[in-house]
Length: 488
Image (cartoon, rainbow, N blue to C red; front, side, top):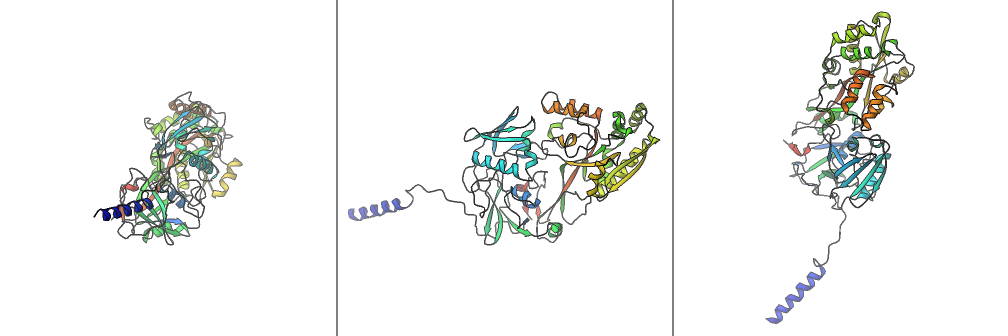
């Protein structure tokens, strides 16, 4: 009996020596998997462009870039009010021209730890990419202070710089032929030739009903709405930049986007040299009527140059209602004679929203006594006409970045007719430098009125009726609430 026990102990020791007694080595992520039909997955399919990259810094198609938000996290994500919510960053602070970030204890979907070196590589890749470069234009360099503390330098002060740090952090060193790795809500995976999004089990506090999402390759994104209607894909995003909206048979939700529509003035037009007249134009416009009549309600009226959804102005209340009598009084005080000349409104006639807005503005100006003519041209000709000053007022639009930087409207690509040395621009710089409050800039702007804000446009997101949920997309993430979605 003792001999038998001794033999059994010897066998047990040998088994232990060749198996679990050794420290396991870290294994590379296996991005292949076997698709199970009971995973609550087969009825949810997203479109992607197969010919385009899945790496967010090489991708060019909007659908691939939007989908990457499910796979990769940034230092922050932005909510519907454009307020930064920590993701990879545990906390961050702005000190003059520097942003200090403490990294949280984050793991990629393959189980490896996200490092400061990964964040550095992603930062410089983002600055070189067409899609992410504009939001990082003010950032210069990236410094690693320790394993979990990094610092970013800026060209100029920006109190809202954290809102720009939502660029995706991609695991460095992954071969190009392999699927890119992130720390987001899902990860890329293959089942033979088929591509999927599979829930990232290393993502804490994320337990969606939908564990796996099929990805359907599309060759022409112009037919994504039809693909949704026939049930091939589950979501269709339309930013309405074409200026028209055609309703489709699906659950549709509006989401605000950061594109301001405004009226710019020709600085050589005698009528609008006087700020009282520019104020009068603003008071003559009813923003609610403009949104309803010109944009089919696919916009949010804005009497300020900032997005009305922005958290930084949530406590402010500025009416966008028309004040026609006040506008007429300002015209009288200015000493101009409205009927002494013709006012030409320049707009892009290929855009239905802009065409209808031009007609509405024409009516508003006629109520002030102006003789008005609308001048519609093709989209490609608008810049030429602006350059040649063939307008008195023009309808402009500018997509602002997440920190609500107004520089493009004062000194940048959208600044036609704006005086760089205006009172508004000077006060804006004072505000950005931290030497006055936002209300001080707003009061100066409303007095100076270098351009007239009209509205911020909306986009629409349509969902197949096979899924249901809260459906609360936001400008920077149309999948913001995907954890609330379920298959019917």
